[in-house]
Image (cartoon, helix red, strand yellow):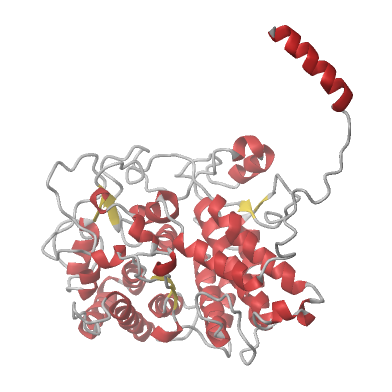
Length: 491
């Protein structure tokens, strides 16, 4: 019976299988929009970037810089060498931004009421270009050489891995081009989820971000990029840089519509604050990794119970009844998260001055960075002043004194580590560049006791994009797809 059925089926297919049918618009949504709405695309990209969850997208970098430790499921804390993930950066984040740029770059866009209703064409493009570089910086700083120049070409299934030096050159060029497009007197993008279309603030962001990228290249020489000159040029730009709380870039979360602070996803029972962080901020205790000996009130926004000492980083087993609770404010669904702050920008300026890149006063800039960090954390994490953080003036004076004894670059690096909390990605990039503070690798590490320098490439790249994957691996030192290999700027 089964054999007969197969014979009948094969005969039927012989009459119909080769017919070519035109299904017309059967699979087309004739009621849908003909092109994307630029406001929705921009807002969607920013929201997706800010709300991404999961261990590789949120938690792992904070483990690598020892903000947090893992009580269970502790592969990341012990430096397991496994494949990373980048698809959430490329899909509906970078692709959205590229679509905005494509739409507004059409010569007819300026006469389309639906497009110009979302703001000045130039300003829409500028913000999309700047934010596109923000996302690409995350990707290349995590992996090394990555798809960049043709990564967003929908017709390319096996994109080339661009050299990290070329990527940085491209990002810097794009941000400078975007900055030149900005008209601060014209309407900003309707979909701007960070500054609400305030283009003067986007100019300050662009300059501060250019300084951040230039500083990331402080240890390498480049035939394409003069990092010192780029830093100085951005600092001298007439549009200014981020200096005050109201100029900072923060992600705010629309909890009523289900867009929560992604740290709300973290299961508190699985994580704790490290003893290294708590002791360093308190200025006493075991496992301190900084030169600080003065109580830093910012510790009050990092741990739930200030009587707890935190837990030492990097052990396989911590036993039972251990406590190192992460402060509840970080886990609250409505708590904003930083993208680029005044404190970090002041500290980048302090480092540039200490390196001789500028003639600014190092000590004044260091103090400003600490005071600005206090202002941010007070306003965002303690708006009702319940914790009474203070303004940080006493602490700043003590750290200025420390800079005179242990060295300016060391104290600046240590203060960046504190000021960047909980922004693990940037803190990890800073630590790999400077190795400040002096972090001790996990005691029970499973990768020969080395703090990771990168993420391994996604697992399917070696098979689906093999030749370009191999080219990317060849750019590492050593040329091996491991988490201890170093990328171009990590020299």
